[in-house]
Length: 228
Image (cartoon, rainbow, N blue to C red):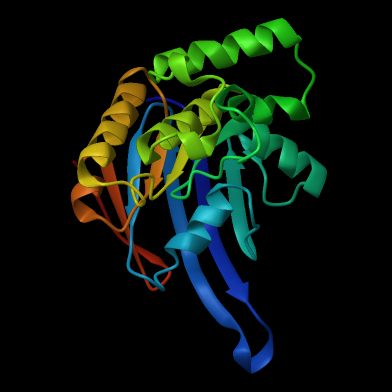
């Protein structure tokens, strides 16, 4: 059995204090192993977004432990958590989150700015990834000169630039038309076939069924897990 990339044990998350305290996640246990493609679904208010923030090291659990690639990140300091997030997680957002003033090539290089790299090798890495997602002809373009599908491909290249242990995708086709969304999902499947570990948050049950394993959350509890 492959090693675990994600291990959540007894995760609880509360917001607020006193009588207004809200119990959002209620004892979540979840393991994702190297090379898995997992979708997480749930209705609005289910705790899906809170779980996404915890998985992405954008927030911390109130109780429980989160081991990311073998390291408990639930108690480490903010600086170390930021470094772990930058190195180990590749984010793919619904809204792309590209920097409008930067070119395609510069956007892909952004995660590498936080750690010293040889300039030539860093640029070569970015060019290689953009070629892999079919955008080698768009290196000098700005985000507003790209289609939605092209912007998401830039975001995927950026997510891969530090060779993370997992890709965390939040509604990656949410701002795309059906045909373009299918192209992006095909690219995600190709990355999975290459051995990438992918966790995808989606409200779309049809898209979720395309993953190798489906996890459903309701009222802060994992309700069911199923293989595709």
